[in-house]
Length: 191
Image (cartoon, rainbow, N blue to C red; front, top):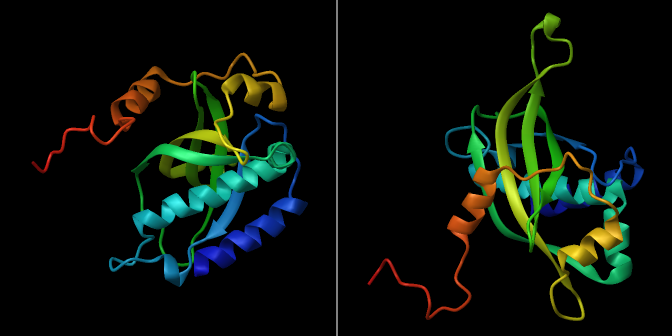
């Protein structure tokens, strides 16, 4: 239930947050709550994925992309995601999720999200320490049915900057974890 209220809060905050260009990095601030903790007293790994959802919606709102999608009757869905952890977030720690669009393949958009905290060293000059980093591959669906093509997406959002590139390892990962189109095509590891 706390995630519902956190989502509502950030939905309101994003309406008043700094406006961003469509391909800018969005920085969304959070604090670890008692309900985020697992038995080992650090943020539960599943909570990271939920917070990534909230941060992506914040990014979509603040870049103006959400308004475009609502006008067209489109909505996002996650196709696949992965996350790696470097350091634990504990109760009461403030952290920021940095979200950015990496680029596209023929069917989907890729987003990178980093959980960061400021480096404690006074000489760090605003440097951040990465606690976790996740990647999602997402698609957009039409409320009337069907999938939004990448061409339709780019036409709606605008030209893609030349420096946006999806790393080849991420494209390989996406192909490796793709689910088969039909159940019959999937061999079961349990048989």
